[in-house]
Image (cartoon, rainbow, N blue to C red):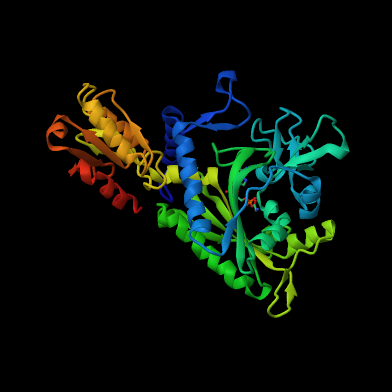
Length: 442
Ligand code: GAP
């Protein structure tokens, strides 16, 4: 595994190995590959779609399902310019852009110093502000009246629905609205695989609190979010909190801390946790004319809540889980690569493997598969030697392989092999469902 201070070669190797594995095993493909790819966009393959869903489900379970103070929302991606006028994104959501006059490459001025990373020329244009939002037109006429934007964050959906949610759920601060979904930013320099892309998924919570409690809740969410990553297997020495300096803060925030992961290129952001104050509710109230405030019928008090926002990237977080889980060791004198993913995140929790393709073993194997499928996502693999099938499942992170052999026909038991220790135990088919439930913590 690559750690802090690891030689750059090793760090580069890890990245290359994980990117290759993603392509080779069907986690993540370059988009439109048959046409040579398309501008740093990616498609999530059969394993990637399972794992990404597991990341989002784990977030939803912890942030919505297991709480009675948070409710969910799924707001439109195609959104009114008024939202982005109020939020400040039309005016402020920009990066400084420079062009190299020699090779005509385009760069973010704040990332490259005074020379072009491509050709080394110092003949660069003056920086100009480039808005990161994708602009389009809703309807057949392309005019100012039909302009729409693809949302650059899911957060604004929660603010513009604040009153709808308050009235329909009868929640009172402190309470939160959570959303998981796609966001779009016309990044000048998408990079590092799915770390920074133009189309990505976010998992965001807007937690509305009485203003006097904002600092306490900010601290609470820092701790809670750090614990989530650790619980799902990010090692403590690869995770840290970094508080923003005052000059780094976004236009809406009075305090922000990033949850950072030690990526192969160094520490970088997984999630931002911000005290957004009453900035957004006041801004939308001013532009829309609606009063976005909480009225406490008991005390007669009326106030605009402050907002604490833990904002994470689902696709970026999935990449961090893959990097943290990748390992190589030796089994029976043979080198293997293994993804030591938490079972809750692995694309498959179990693989059912008939020892041979023999007609007599397949029906019993399908019976076992039918017992497990209601509990978890399973692979079913009949081809190649059992050793190669184990290696394949290790490499895609499947925590348990369930092998049906000829003895199974006699004793109605199967062998369950553990990915990490490679130990095998014999379990009666009748007790398999209970055993799996226990292992999954279900
Ligand atoms: N609502 C606040 C907000 O959007 P952000 O720090 O810009 O804050 C939150 O984004 C998270 O979304 C980031 O920490 C990152 O994980 C993810 N994210 C942002 N831009 C991304 C991009 N271009 N590609 C992949 N993930 C991105």
